[in-house]
Length: 153
Image 1 (cartoon, rainbow, N blue to C red):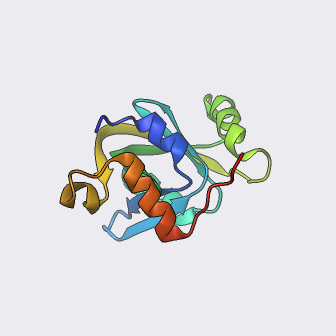
Image 2 (image 1 turned 45 degrees about the vertical axis):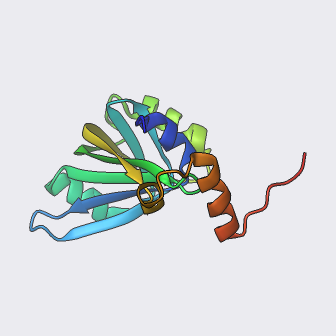
């Protein structure tokens, strides 16, 4: 599978941000508003994540994952994060881009900018256990499992 960070970010509903405190206490939490700005930078809106923000300030090493739930494949990203606040020069540009996803419905308190140092693919085990399965079959199987029905046009 060719890894396309931006493609899978656009297809995913949530991402999971893993951080740890200076003492090594792990924390993982879902983030609803995020985008792959480019192949080396991920932006995540901090809406209600004081622990993630505190951890990033103490220890910038993070891991982010997101998947297309129907294809059951996606990306795992590792890198360094920093907290971007309203006084930062990139704030308005970043905020405008995140608001294309969120509108004004979500109060963005700060933005986590992740500089990507490593990215790898995430695949459901069925792709490995059943190599003959293709993406279309995986999507059909997931939709059946989750009880999702497609509307006729």
